Amino acid sequence: VSTPATCKNALAVGATLSMGYIDPPEDPVTNFEIMEPVEYKKRPFQLVSSLFTPVFEFKANETVDLVMTEFPRVCEELSAKDRDAVKGKVVLVERGDCFFIEKVQKLKDAGSIGTIIYNNEESGSGFFKMASSEGGFFIDMPASSVPMSTGRLLAEAIKSSNSSVAKIRFVSRSDESLPAFESIAEYSSFGPTMDGRVKPDVVAPGEEIKSATSVDSDNQCATDRISGTSMATPLVAGITAIVRQYLVGGYYPLGERGMTKPTDTPPSGALIKGVIINGAAELKGFAQSGLPLEPAPSFRQGWGRVELDTSLPMPGSGRALKFADWKNLQSTGDEHVYCLTTPQTNLSSISVTLNWMDAPGALSGGGYLVNDLDLDIDVPEGSADVSWGASVHPDRKNNVEKAVILEPAGGEQYAIKVKAHQIQWPMGNGRGQLYALVVFGPEGIELNEGCEKLGSVIEEDLVVEDDEMVQVFDNQEGSSAMEASIAGNEE
Image (cartoon, rainbow, N blue to C red; front, side):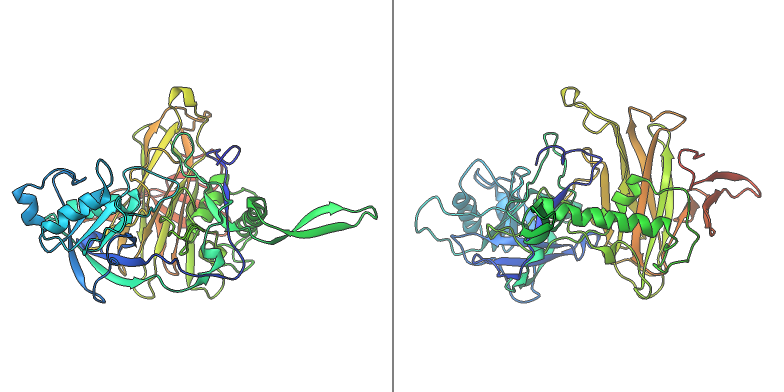
């Protein structure tokens, strides 16, 4: 990916295919999910089986143990402790230092029942195929490969378990044809950028799109069907216009015109970009190489394919949009806390996105991310942690952070925290770093400033919505703290 799409504050767009259906790859792809520990429960992941072993799969809904060894690359002789630990279990292994067949054979000899090998570097390709270094060589134990981000997820699950054992469950094979828009186009440029950021941000259909081409001698406009990211980008530009109209034209919060009075205060660019990324759908398809796409956010698909119906609620959709815009963190260490309350019934996943327009950086000085904000979410006791997808958390490279509450608990509170990890370049005029926070989920969710968590009040500010603006009051009678809808006048 190249300039100007590498600009961190821009919304960079990649292209998916558009026409027809795409058949599943010849090499088997299997689907699993984490079952334990509870913090990672129901987190899905995909595997690509190696070319020198059986398909990596088990009996339907069978749960197996997943462990790691002391030296994760498994190129040395296993210790007696490791040999005992891997017996009857699947082993997570890091790529590198020796051949795939050496790693797999060593673990088979120790009594393991399978091997998952993860990439040892971040890559735009994501998944990779494993072949034998010796022609015709076959090991009778399933082995598979995953990208570095999936390896990181599985390693975190293992390490967070009291017994250093995670449990994973076989779900299915990916053997169905999918609509072409679920797969990325090979002509779509991908990251990482020079400083390791995710680009593109989102993707959209870009294959065989009817497009303006020329004006003939009779001054008549001509069109043709063309493929490219130049065809996907106008689609997303139109969507951003719809998002802006929705926010300023009185369609918020449920999509029916006249629900609120149109406002003269424009939504920030950070909010519009945040709404689009927050609603993006992770692609379920493949690269044209036949390999699965790395989970979002990735260097191929960004945060996924733009989806208006998961970005903006419409009448009768049963969904709701909440946001905070033009919010100001003054200096390093400052923190805002929001309370997300879930409805008792009709629950569905909730996506939360933090976005800010960062100050210019300098590659020569290593200042890619100048003002670094962090998004964190505290979950109710006994609930699964939120999913950060394929991203590293906390993120020190991107000025977008997105989390998904896959299975929210009903009638509970989630504390959403936005913290200034580092502000090196305040925006001036009394401002540090402005940001937008976007939440989309089932109808009935509420987003307030301040959150009572574990019996103690974190903050006591309350957001009160009226027809014209959002005003924030503290708990002292008659004390107005700010009018959040007025750009630059926070606090």
